[in-house]
Image (cartoon, rainbow, N blue to C red; front, side, top):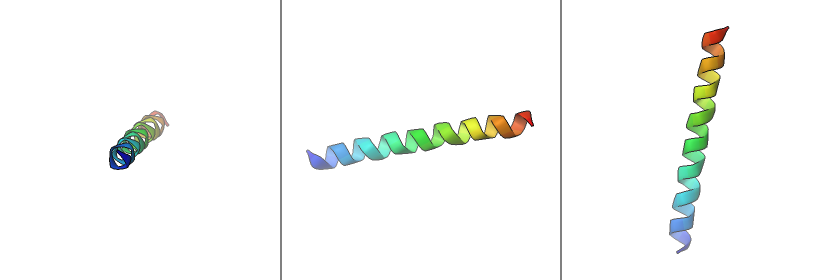
Length: 31
């Protein structure tokens, strides 16, 4: 049970990181 929660947290973290990088990329492309 705990491992599933950890995996979910890691997935959310990875997704968040990817979203942040995408946002960063679009900001860089604009400038």
